[in-house]
Length: 560
Image (cartoon, rainbow, N blue to C red; front, side, top):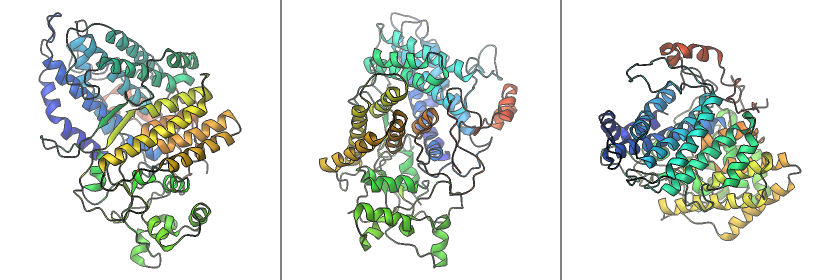
């Protein structure tokens, strides 16, 4: 989290400092000739902040969902997410200024974009914390300052955000006297912004459908009305990182790349379950997801090696059960197979033991989404030494793949009419295509595209599992497991999906006795309770693994 904030602050410093100086200027006083300079800067700053807000919980939420070991030490408390809380309100200041600068003047497209960004950012924040200061937030610098804003109910905030999306759609339909500039997402393409507004609304309706009286009906209508992010991926809401240090001295590369490739690999331990199941399924994405640093097999009889091996010998290459499953899939293993598997050095879920100096052994993030290196069976495992060229990965926020999984969920559990199986196949192929395309771009010297036969074999295996599921709920469980594989790099998406549906059920339970259950929300920061009297009750009475946000009717629990 510290690294993400450092990257965000360095990358945004010039823009943020500039925008702070202009928020009180007289903007758009002439509705027939609006000034663009100030709103351009505010928009760019708002969009950069959106990237930070959207990705700040990526690793932690992946830990909650069992994809990696981060935030999985069962010691989350009221001091854990103060930075996340403060950054959200700080990051949205320029977006609020953009809304104020464009409301009531002839600048509807800038206003519409600001409304969409607010809806997307705030929806994510409600999903994290539940009730939040909203209607009275961002008013500390007004003529009548409010430094102790009330907490609005999470369900009420959601309703307002849905209306905000509708207002944005109306604004996009209007004629604007100026073209939008400074837009790093869609380069001022208003039809794409209109699709995003409708998609953000749909996403809010999907999350909240079990917490709203007309939830399923409204969700179905949003799908049938259409105008959403397209199946082709041409409208994806993503951010593409660069592969070099920015002119202002900040590092514009993907945070995962910075964390793993620019020094001693400090990336979080990746889940053995995720690696093993992708391997046994012959998932074409495996070599693009993970980079193997070593072919050395540690010796548990050697004191130094023993201290490096994860808790309880939970080290794939030494697991007898792993090799039983491996033999069933690949045949009798050879020496080269052991060297290959040794590079998948992660941890089992819930292993909260201390981390030794194992940076040269840990599996690192690969090409997707962090812009790292490709690591197929034929790739020679090599420890990262820092300074590797790359980092031009992607931050997927809402993509065509997400939309397909949303649609399947709505069909299987929301009353939408459609062919879930056909969409399921499309979702898998779409995501494999995105992964491979990025891999060939960021590591062209090494990355090798899977053959069409390899892709089809994998897709057919998944369709076979889908067909074998004997009920609608069993099919949803199977689909959500594929979403679990596909949402690598989208921790918030899989965390939300698990809270919405309760699936997939096949995530490994923690191997050590936990101090907590599944994280249903984030704990309120104690610092907020010290500053805002309205927060005291929240800090004291809300328990993050007991009290869900309003739309979570499942209240997922781990099995022990």
